[in-house]
Each structure stands twice: as structure tokens, then as C-alpha cells.
Length: 266
Image 1 (cartoon, rainbow, N blue to C red):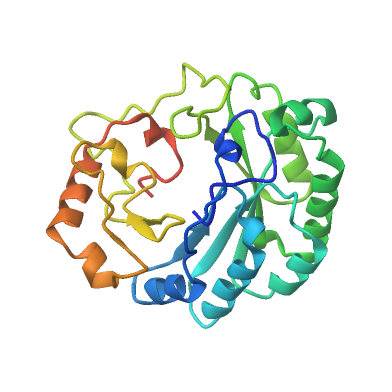
Image 2 (cartoon, helix red, strand yellow; image 1 turned 90 degrees about the vertical axis):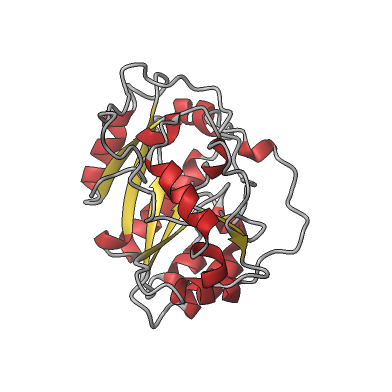
């Protein structure tokens, strides 16, 4: 999570209301070193807020990972996805996920809280022309408010020959104003593992703290981070009894976030 701040005012989320982070930012090289020290690392996802508020840091990370097999995924609303950034990063092992919940110009204002339709769509179109198909996908958030708009986004993705995925909306952790679909739940039998991100994912917060996932502190007794990249190395962070205990609790965790894409068996 490179930042909690955002350049849009989306109604599904309240992250943009948070004050700017004023403490020492984590050096990109610290992240590169951490990832390279994990032999099994396959994918690194940069989220926010809006990640492209920190383009220079992202470019440093991409450069640091260029000789690895690690794929960097950037989830962006597209507002700051200008031509120069696309041109400067397209040759790296990078994948952009465009957050698009509607292609209706009027409803866009409700979703984004700003009149940014033309700028974002122009940026998306440039990306479609200058990036390869495997470097782009579109993700939509499904809620009562967007249910009727998702098919239009799907058609838009098909027209540009890119993948389209749908993420169920949860209000917890986002504090937005949308309505989750009541018929959308993850019914995993009680005898089976509940969260498949356990032991597979780690999350780096903007202050350098490392968690098993962004919602780790929702679990009782797991409020403390596993460590911090400002001061700790990989072994200090993931090979402790505390970390092992968090992973075990995470496997049994039955919080609302279990409907998110990180909780996939495959």
C-alpha cells in the first residue's frame, strides 16, 4: 500500500478523506531487497489510495526488479496514467489493473466524485494502443449501485480484448457508501481452510509495517505487525513464532473480507 491518499473522491471508499502521510517514506530499494530475498515471490501488487501519486517510487521499484521474474501489478483509477508514464514503464514486467465501475458518463460522477471521465478514458485508450494485452486488465466492484453497470464495463473490456474481473464490494476497511449484495457471500465449509491468502501473501503498509494481509489486525491477538522494513530483514519478519501464529489464525479467519480476490484456492 504505497499510499492511502487518492486523487479521486469515490463514493465507494473514504480513503481520500485521510490526511497526507507525513512520516518518513519507505525507500523503494528496501522493498526491492525484501522481495528479492523471498525466492518464492511471483507477484508484487501496488495499491492505494492511488499508487500513481508516487510514480517516481514505482519506477525505481520496477527498475530494481527488472532482472527478476517478479511481475508488478499496479491497480489504478487511471487519472494520473499519463502517456509519459506508460511509455517509460511499458518495457518492464508490469501489469496495470484499471478500476472501472461504469462507462456511463453521468454515473461516473457518482462513482468517482469528480468529473474525470474524459481524462481517464483518454488515458485508458492510450494504454490500450501502447501496451500489450497481457499488460492490462479491468476490474469492477460489484454492489447494488453498480449491478446494472457491470455488463457495460464487460463489453468495454471485450472491445479492447482485455480481461475483466469483478470484485464484490465490502464496506469494512473502505468506509464507503455503497451497498454490498446480500446474496454475495463466500460459503466455505467450516471444516475447510477459510482464507487461502494465509501463508501465501504478505502486505507492506505505507509506514513500512509488514502484515500477512491488510486486514490482519481485525483478528484478535494479531494487532501487531510482523515487523517493519525500515529496521527488519526477511527472517526477522516472517520466520517468527508470532508470524506462524498469525498465519494459523488467518486460515480460520471468517471476516467479511473472505470474498476478496486474494482468498482464492488456486
